[in-house]
Image (cartoon, rainbow, N blue to C red; front, side, top):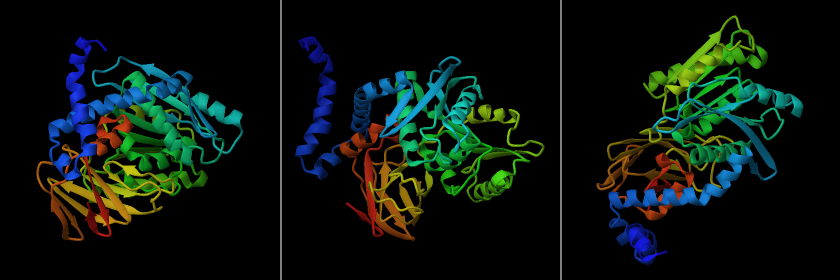
Length: 392
C-alpha cells in the first residue's frame, strides 16, 4: 500500500484498532463504557463490509451455479429479474413448488411450472427445486439453512433489499409456507400460502408478519379447505387481541378445487405492499421442532433449543417486559433503534424488576450479528436471562 493510500485508509484503520483490537486487551467494563452510539455505528458499517467481502466467493458460486450445497443435499433454483431496480433495492420472491412424495420427474415438472406461475412487476422471482422428494420436502431441517444462503447471495449479487423478501408456495409448497413463514418470520416482509396444509404450524410466530391464505372451497383433501377457514378464525382472534400485529388476508374460493385457475395471483401485489419490520417492539416466539437459535432480537445458546418452548417479550421506551419465557437461557439482543442505550434499561419479569442498569455496547456482539449480511439484524448489546434473573 502506498503512503497516499495508507493515509486515505487511516481513519478506518484507527477505528478498527480502537474498537475491535484494543478492547481485547482492556477490562471489559472499561471498553464497553467508552463505546458510543456513533462508534458502534461505525464498527457495524465496517463489519458489514468485511462480512460482504468474506462471503462474496461462496455467494458467487451459489448465484452463478444456481445451486446451494449443504452436506449431501443440493438445492437448485431458477430466477427471473423483473422491472427496474428501485433506489432502495430489489424485491425477492421465493416461490415453492408442489409435488412432494412422488417421483423426481414429477417434482421436476412441478418446479418448472412454478418458475413461471407468478409474475411480480418488480423484483427477482426465484423458484428453488426442493433437495428431496419427500412429503415434507419444504420443511425438512436443511431447507432453512439453504434458503438463508440463497437470500445472502441475492443480497450480494442482485442488490436485494432484506426488507423486501417474500415467501409463497402452492400445494406442497403451501405446506412449506405454513411451516417456514412462522419459524423464519424475521426473514420475510410477508408470506402467502396457496392450497396447502398447516400441519403442526404455530400461528403466534406470525405476529409482525403479514400472512395470506388462498384456498379452493372444494379442495377437501386432508381437510385443506376447512383448515384454511379455521386459520382465518385463528388469525382474526389473534388480530383482535393484538391490533395491527397479525395482519392477514384469507380467500376461500368456494367454486374452486385444488387448482384455483390463477385466482391466487392477486397475492403478488398484496405481498408487494409490505416491507419487513425487522425490529418489532413485541415478539411471540414458539420454538418449532426444526430449531432456530435466533428470532428477531431474541436468541438462545446453540444446542439449547426446546421444542415447543415459548417466549413473549416486549419493549416500550427503555423497559423490557418478559410476559412469558420457557427457555432456560434467553438472549435479548439490543441496539439504539430498539431503545436508548445511553440510559438505564429496566427488565420486568412476572411484574418484578429484575434489572435496572446500563447495558453496554459490545464490539463482539456487533461482529457476531453482522454475519447475517442484514443491516436490520445487527445489534450492539445483549442481555442474558437465566433462572428469572439477568446474568452479567
